[in-house]
Length: 591
Image 1: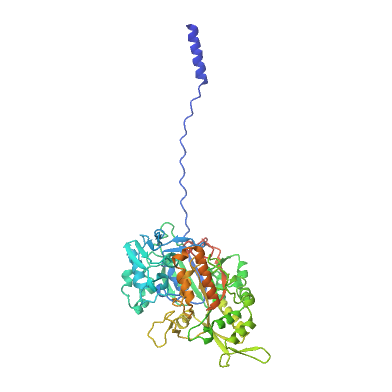
Image 2: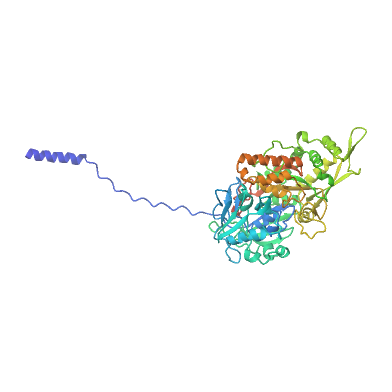
């Protein structure tokens, strides 16, 4: 027993010695440090953007057709959504993406619930519905972009149906499918306050002169800035909006003021940039190399959705020869696009032959005549075409003398705006090119508002029509003209918005172009059939081919923009939509 007891004790000792040691105590984990607070830029300074050329026309944006007016108003009141440089949609006044029904006919729009007018009244879906039905769709206001909200049903043009659901939701119902409806119409929608606008409803003069709309006193927290001052042809000043709906968490925007400063010439504007008197401006192509050498200037070269063009006046107060397609082709054939790009644009452009820019998925050159390039830049052939059209005489030596049908010299008036060396250079280039074939060109440099009112707006002579940009085929502008140097923009994702320029009844078809097949195609491209990308691409190809063949304008180039900034300006996202995030720009050093 004793041995047994000893053996048990020994075994117990062995077991005890072989057992795993007791685990050490579990240490208490150190507290996880809180993430550092997000640091946002400091609000400071005045950002001054330089502009040469024309001032805006109006802050009452529903009456506007020029980019400057939309830009000015856009500082203070934004739209439902916007795009970044990759053309991705970013919500603005939308609370969530637009919901589209399975049949593609119903669009449900839900706005944010924190939007307010300046008097503290909430912005509601009712304001949007009122803006659409009572203002934009009205026959008394002549909204230039009505066609974006219309559709063809049973051979008739009708407006889409708009219904109020509740304070934050409204529904848009179509009878036909439009694959580009959201991009062309809905995302850019901006409201007027119903409780103010209703006072002026039906009275165009009163609406046009309404102080609230012309001074943007109603915009509340709907934009990054608030209107402060507009001295015509001098400067447009907005001040930081502390209530900006997108800035409640970030403190944006970060400039105390944003000033658009107008200069009489681009030379004066660029001198101000070089001296540091302004923070940003566009740089003329021939000056880019110089400014890229300046350590205190950052130059961004970016693609654009714009195109340079020379518009031909086909209305009855333009030279009658311009209503002949062959004559327009001959004129375009006489203007050398490659020389224009090399010597006027200094290489910062690609040749344009129609209205859809190269970055667009719908761009094509297939079947598109390339006037002004290669075999279609031919001044001798142009003279032959003019002779065949009745505008010339063949001399005994075989040469051709160009003249009108009465044997008098052809003298055309070319109109463009003042203040831009680039547009003046284009004008002189065109004058020289057409002079080579015997067409004299006189040019008029006029302020932008004058160009809009006296040369682009039109009415039927002797009628009581209000002048607008397209009052029908018999309407003419106050002043006669033959050609006009301009730049238009095309939505790369949804080019059908350009119907406003090229359809017979397009709201900004001020030069009188008309082609029934083009009208039909612009309607078809907004149809169920066009949901198939390949079908839509074919439609856009045919539109491009027809317009390029008709030459209602000489499409010169798709330019690249050069924008200069002082290097202390940060937050810039360079690209085709440069400026889409302007409310996030800031001064890295004292401004």
